[in-house]
Each structure stands twice: as C-alpha cells, then as structure tokens.
Image (cartoon, rainbow over all chains, first blue to last red; front, side, top):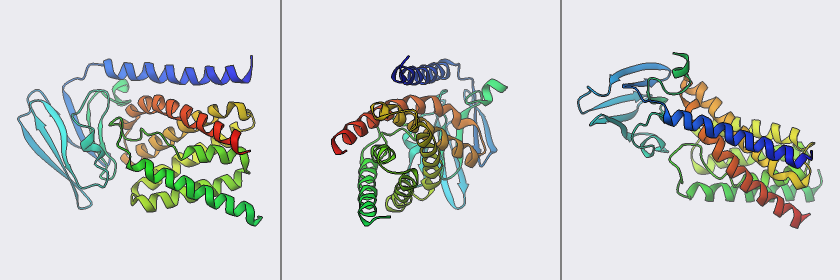
Length: 119
Length: 161
C-alpha cells in the first residue's frame, strides 16, 4: 500500500470518527438541568423547564457577563470580553456549551461534554 | 545564517502575518469558537518543506507573537502558542514520512493537532472538560481546512522551488 493511500485512510478515519462523535453529541437528549459555572466552580444549577424569565449576572476580575433566561432558553446577552464569541453562539443547545473563555464562564446542560458519560 | 535566508524568512513571516490579520477580519462561517481556515498555515507548511525545523520555528513563533499583538487579543496568545507548538512538533516529525506529493496530509495533521492543543489549554483555563464537546466539530473543520491549506501549500511550493 502506498504512503498516499495510508494518509488518505488516516484522514478518513479521523473525519468519520469525529463525525460519529458529533452526531452522538447532537442526538443525545438534553435533559432539563442547566449548569452555569465560572473558573471551575458551579454558580447556578437551574431546572430550565421551571425557571421563570430572568437575567443572571456573573462577574470575573471586574468583567461582567449577563445571561438571559427566556421561555426555557438560555443565552448570553452581554459580555465584557473582546471577542463576544459567547454571544454569537446564540441559544444554548444540548450538543455544545456556551463558553466565554476570557471570563472563564461556561453554560451547559448537565449531561453534556465528557461529564455526561461519567455520570 | 546567511543574509539572504534571513531576508526570506522575514518576508515569509510578514506574509503569514498579513494573511493572519486579513483572515481575522473575515466573518465567521460557523458560530463555534476555533473554527477557521487557518490560511497562515500555508506559509508554515511551505517553510517545513523548504527550511530547517529551527528556521521554521522562528518564523512560526514570531508570527504567532506578532499576530496576537497586532490583533489586540493577547488572551488568545496562549491558545495559539499551545496549538502552534503541537502543530509544529507533529508536522516536523511527519515531514520524514510525507514527501512533497503528500504535503496535504502534513497540513491536515497540523490542523488537527492545533485544535487538540487549543482545546487542551481551554480545558486547563476553564478547569472543566465541558469544552471537549467542541472537539469533534473542530476536528471535522480542521480536516477540511487543513486539506485546503495543504493543497494550497503544495501548489505554491511546486511553483516556487
């Protein structure tokens, strides 16, 4: 077998593996518990079906994030960081968390990420 | 180091920086942090096949450092450095197995390693494994982007050397 075909197979395996992994993440049931944590510590644990509409503020080293809860959906409405990636992520989905790296803030469903398989 | 080589490396660093800054200005295709084309990688892959590993490392890390300074996003520096180091180490090792016809694979491997490095730093900073959920999406985009930049590098090298 030529080098070329070995390389093609390795690339295909990585892509198929990652594809299967992301399909698994997307199809998994979301659950109802949303966890908001900062710097590795859990700040809030919310039952999203029962939570009334409200805003939550979180502060990290003087920088502020505002998290909005509306009709059972969670999203970041304000962030003091330079990139605003967390706001562009939009509403929280079961497969990917909302992450604000500069302010070390994570919003996720309880059974998302690797923690879900361990629990 | 000969002056000619130094000039060449300086020019390539500059070229990579320009590509890097312009790419930052492009709107994101997918709202997943870390998903991007990584066009500056074309220069890195070209360097790996044209210069020694030490020279390539000088080019790459000046680009990363200056890129973070020029874009004003020093927070991202650590992610870039971790990703860049893993990517560079992997590509230098793989260089022995992949000849110039298989440059695309080097680039794919580099992109995948870059993503793994960035996620690792994100896990350390956030003290949480949550961000691992991003990895499969990043791996797929990394393979596609790596393939694209790799083929570009292959074409560029063929015409230049």
